[in-house]
Length: 251
Image (spheres, rainbow, N blue to C red):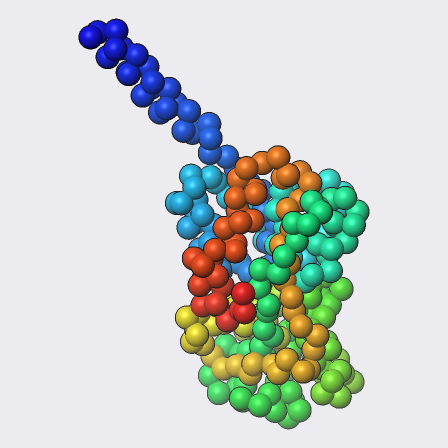
């Protein structure tokens, strides 16, 4: 009896010590516009799997350069579909791993209630000093903002008022802190649960800029990491998609 009990005790101990070994870390580069939803998704993923998600947020263009230069990221959540495609072509991302995890929406936002009207006419009236955008060459939302400005024929009129942030996160910060009265931001930064958090906003019509398709890719550094592969799969689950929708994205 003692022998059987001893063997059972050893098995239980083995399982207890093996559990942490099975859990792993995954290094994730996340486009700044997806900061809020990804924090929630990562917490859900960690709770469900035991893996730890290490998140770094920033501009898509900056991440692309860092990844091509050997940055130790294992999963890339881009703000466009171009950067992941180029990484796959260059062998820095696993072939066939790319998919669109969200389609983003652009919004013109002010922290001041009533300043931005529902049709975006404030851009034509010009009753503001500064308009914040993300750097068009680094951030897809910045590129969409510039395309919108051109489509409206306001490039010359608005050029003196533009203040540029490296990422959409920095552009949002300019408006939130009052350094710019209005700015083009990701809808996800100002909406949660389908409601505007504060201030005033205009949802930019889709026909004023190219679709903002945001692709995820499993990077080559993460191809043998079970945590990285499981996170990629988790992004496709109903739980993750519900979070994505709640921030104004189309999964």
